Length: 108
Length: 115
Image (cartoon, rainbow over all chains, first blue to last red; front, top):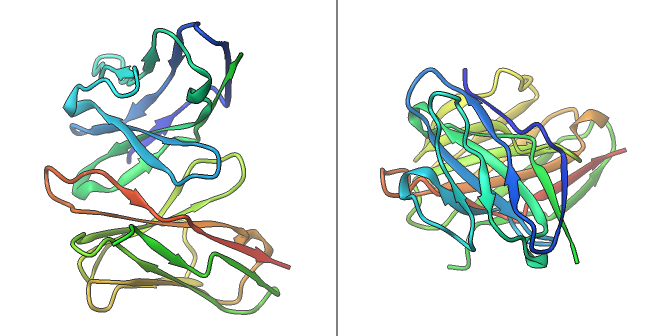
């Protein structure tokens, strides 16, 4: 079975503060991990995937297989980062499982 | 091609009625996924297809739910004898399905309200 856990439903930070959205996963094989984002009134869209090791909109995420974590980080939050963030895992045959999501609220 | 398209966007129905949702994926995408999302929850996996083959159906899904992708293009999700607990947003997503195409492209969803 594959499972994704996002322990925080809501994370409020001040503009300019660092952000860390937590994600832990459970999967017996080698997973692909992703972060998806949903801005207000928009579709769910890919933010980044661990295999590309990119920084998108200042966000990064490192896969830690020992801790089975894939936390999303940004050093300085901006107001436009306010959105719902979902961690996702692609397991066998690319079945993609999502976490329950964390709402990031950046306070001006 | 403007992306994944879902119809209808909103459906209000009475308990016991059948409803059907349609999803048109991005044309070259061979993978198609259905998810259900309720308030405060993440997308819950329902089923997915590789071309016309249904690869997996969630064990949480009752027999009232059925999905098809007859020609490997559009897909339909039917819910028979709807219950109030079926009220949710039903999301469709598609992907290329190869090693370079893991990204899911989502539609805007079909919102179901069962009275």
